[in-house]
Image 1: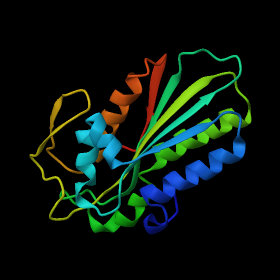
Image 2 (image 1 turned 90 degrees about the horizontal axis):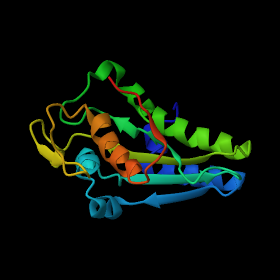
Image 3 (image 1 turned 180 degrees about the vertical axis):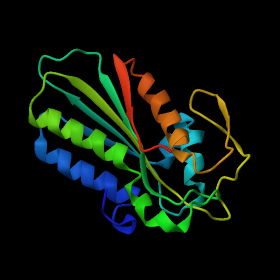
Image 4 (image 1 turned 30 degrees about the vertical axis):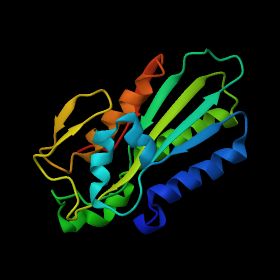
Length: 190
């Protein structure tokens, strides 16, 4: 969480997780989905946060199925905003440099699955990590815009600094399609 945002973009985060989890083996699978995949899934809520940045969004889907585990998984969803300026509803400059840590939930999901695989825990876990930046620009989502989540629900974006809720909405919807035993979401929300 201390890595500067220019050195931990959504792309770099995804590559880092892929590389790290490949070292543990034990049947861990990492899928890295792109914006086209998210659009195909109808993840308008997640994608609305990415409108202001040139950095492409990613969506990680990580699976670990330990020996002797159930078919039904436990779902972990982690907020992965690699830099959060607040978007058009821009944050105060005094603490802006700390906004590189807004991917703490994502880091925790990846680390938890890594630890479970290392321990060869007899559990079936799926991790879902939406990764993006929240930046202001002429193409950014504006306060008052209406976006649509994967489940078809409309969301009026009153404040673009509520990006965590927007990306988690679609990640939680996607996680629920696997009919998990339960879902745990991990996020830095204000």
